Image 1 (cartoon, rainbow, N blue to C red):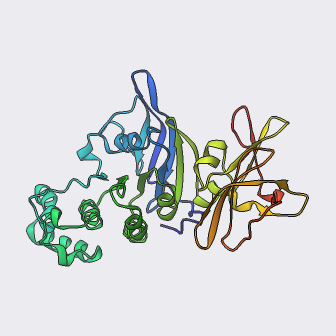
Image 2: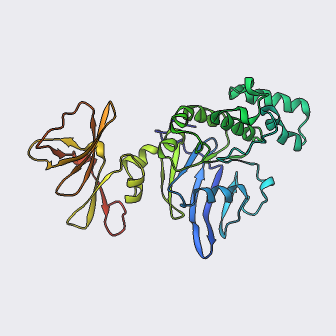
Image 3: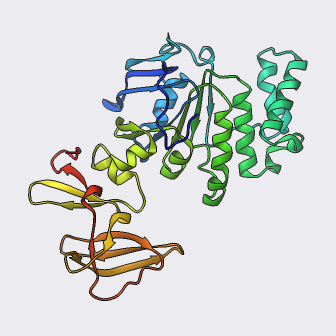
Length: 335
């Protein structure tokens, strides 16, 4: 994997989704999805609940069948193949560990069922335990592990399958916010260790930006934009992507010409009499920064500024026009 802020090197895709479509009750929950993931690349599927992220994973894993389109893995059409013939590893948010088996047995059982010789099983389990810093926990039961430790065991079990594709469905959603932040670098390092393409489903944009090489933003079963985290933030394709990527949310100001002007909260600056007069409605101090909600003649605005910025009466805000985003009001598309 490459740095999330960098554009990945162009190479032949290991996994390709061509016009993938799935309908339930006459409604398209996946609507013509086209995506390609290179060997060793991590692609995050990001979007609100119900946008189709997990449904895409189920189709790739063979747990569901598309109504149209193809799934190509290393040039092989696996669209109709049963799950056991796809060599796909899927890590759920529940981890699905056997509660009565210790860590070592949780890891070796799958290989035993597949007929892997005992000596090879022991060697591989020992290796993956060391890689994920789980060696001292090998004899513990899942109930004796923390949430982060259980997550690493689930990842270790998936790695031992030597998958052609690595699928993760909200793997950190059961962890508290601080632990998720602490584990992100570890998880990225684990994913970097392999050459299989990775698809990582999450609704947490910070998680996606911290782990993935590229992000595909989904809404209503369609890909709104796919690119590096930097590209999505700086050049959103439409108002949905602009609003979904970035916290606090982008300011969207309707214009007289029928367009909508977008300004990120951190791009607003206190200025002289040429700025827009504003009145502070709410203020949150976050140490190094502060976030304010202010009212203006153009509507309420979100403003992120330095924590030491003095906030007084007669405040006016402006921005550099180079930071403007312009969208069509009728379609939401960038213009």
